[in-house]
Length: 207
Ligand code: GAR
Image 1 (cartoon, helix red, strand yellow):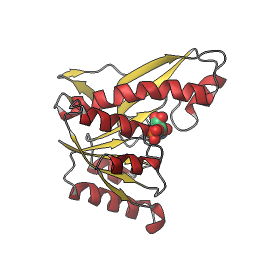
Image 2 (cartoon, protein in one colour):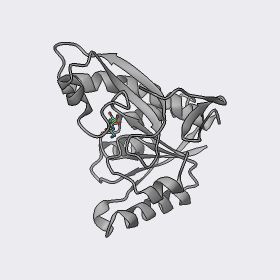
Image 3 (tube, helix red, strand yellow):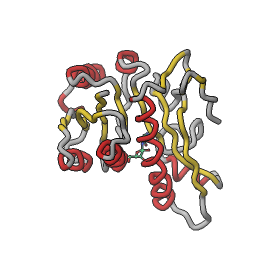
Image 4 (cartoon, helix red, strand yellow):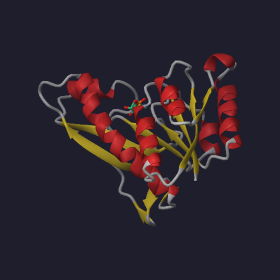
């Protein structure tokens, strides 16, 4: 199965997906990496792995609708069946989400439904949480609100700051994201009736 990875920055999750593909663990082929920023380090990671890259910058489009149409058309032209958002820092229009319904995954750095949106590590620290983590979920029109597929938990230590906590969370992201992508590529995972299903069993709602 062909997939497209959307990035905006460092691309450490992309790197984990590339490693999984190279090791034969992904069950899919990263057809291209698309970034909204031309300075995203992940573009270099993709090039080094021989993966096609494309920059689609918001600056070149009049509005979000035009951007999302161009992005969707680029993805469709690649024949990709799955969109993997890996640190892609744009909010997508409902039209885009509907176009690829059930075929978009995102990773979010919190134990959803906690801390949707930005600054998740800082918010977990300020709340005094003793556990934090990351969630892989299907993308729906509700920002960071789609059905959760898999979460990884990490402890929060007294001496943590946002950077140390982010590092601990990201190490787990690199494990769970390739695993979930491999489930999808094997046909084990789907979204139906607003829920995530694995091996024909509905997954419990998170939280
Ligand atoms: C990851 O930690 C991911 O969970 C987060 O951005 C980081 C990207 O890192 N995503 C979001 O905050 C989405 N709202 P990476 O570029 O090194 O993969």
